[in-house]
Length: 129
Image (cartoon, rainbow, N blue to C red; front, side, top):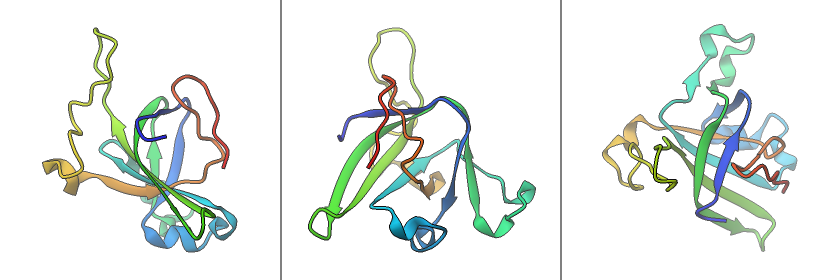
């Protein structure tokens, strides 16, 4: 799964921070996503639930999976993804903003956790965990 591209074809949102995984219906889930994004935007000022610290992603936001961890004898999965800014032209995956895990932009990333219900890859495959 590392190296896979994921694309959300519609608006998608998530909550920010580690506490998300411990509440809000996430206790029953076995897959958590940690997303590093430069373009995800906080929408708490406009939300009916400003305490949720919700982050909104634009349609067709594209991410690359760079790590998949399994714990508790394979029962809990944590998938790490970084948002990509895709280049045009040579049909190669380019990531001009996010170069490595220790990139100087690291402090600007928004880290969120999402539910796996609406996860779709850039090839149209749907993943359920």
